[in-house]
Image (cartoon, rainbow, N blue to C red):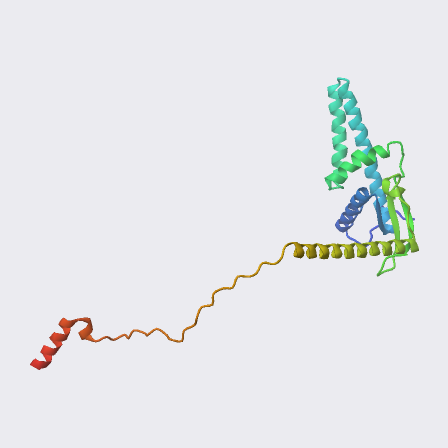
Length: 235
C-alpha cells in the first residue's frame, strides 16, 4: 500500500513543481483547455478543482453580503465581505494573474454553482510528444465555451493545420500583390523630380606661393638696415 504518499513528484523539486502547477492551472483557467501529459494533467486537475470550489464559496459569500447590505444589516454584510475577501486572497496565493483570478471568481464560479465537483475532465489524444513519445492528453473545463467546440483527432488535426498554412500563404501573396499595385500607382501619379545639376568647381593646378620665413631686413625696417651699414664701415 502507498502510505504517506500525497502527490506525484514529476521528477522535480518542490519549488519547480509548485511553479509548474501554478503555470498550468493559470493557463487552464485562461484558455479553458490545455494539452499536456497524463501525470501533469492529473496533478493540475486536483489543484484546479480545489480553487474552483474556493471561488464558489467566495462568490456565494459576496452575494450574501450584498443582499444583507441592501436589507440594512451592515455588521453581517461586513462579515460576509471579509469571508469573500479571504477566499479571494487564498486563491490569489496560487493564481498570480489578476485578470485570470477575476475570471475565476466572476465567470467560472457562477458557472459551476449547481455542480458538486467534477469541473474538469481528461481526454486521451492519439498523438505523442516528439522527443520522448509521451502520451498526450487534453485537460479542459466542463461546460465551458472551449469544451463546446468539436475536438479534432488524428488526420483531422493534420488537415486543419494544412488548411491554416494554405490560408496564411494566400494571405501573404495577396498582401504582396496589393503592395506592388499601390507602389505602381504612386509612381504613375507622382513622377520623379529631375535632380538639379550641381555646379562643378574648376580645379586649378597653381598652388598659392608660400611665404618664406626669413625676410630681408631692408624691406621690413629701413632704420635697422642703416645701423648695420654704419657698423660695417666703422669696423
